[in-house]
Length: 259
Image 1: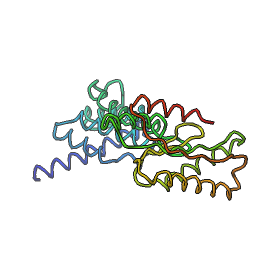
Image 2: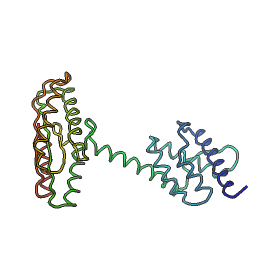
Image 3: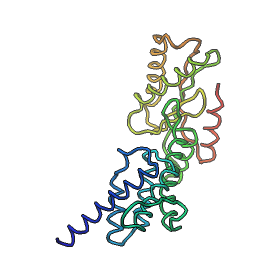
Image 4: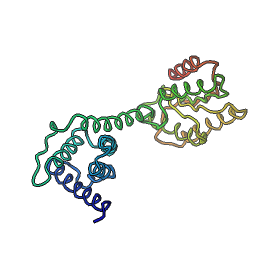
């Protein structure tokens, strides 16, 4: 058998024994166990190269698929047990896994989880718009790139002082939907506060007219939506970015305190 084919056969055999040991150790999703990163790990083991690196990628992929850290490390322990016992039944012991392999896998898993958390923190759960924290980060990037940016914030403020529960939520979802329709060119759209959504966009001459269209569309949809009651008027405002990043951050803070 040619060397390349022999290595592929060894890799397939290792994958099968690893899967069997992992399932026996309690892997809860048999149909989801095989992923491309598993094959990468098997190939690296057979070739004797880059095993920790491929384990980091495996840990990352497991986290992205929703696997817990305990499940991921038990799966790693199954691989280690198989490598230490070429035939017969194996005993899976996570405590026996070498520290470098454990660390590589755990780091990959943690990196994916951190990225997921960062993504959630950057997005407002109700509207799907960027969060106020992300808007401040974006403004920092803007001022670092161009100290005198010719940009403006279009702020939409809904008077929700007399609205209750469901009406408040529906209103902000509606505002976000219309904001996406009017500003569909890749502008930064964010929630600055409980009643305020904004668009960070180029400060062109027809922006005031665009803000009027935005207000009219929101008001029109609110008027025919039976789920919205007790919601006062919607205001829009075009605000050129101030001279400094600190002033821009203060502006966003003030907008967020509107009620």
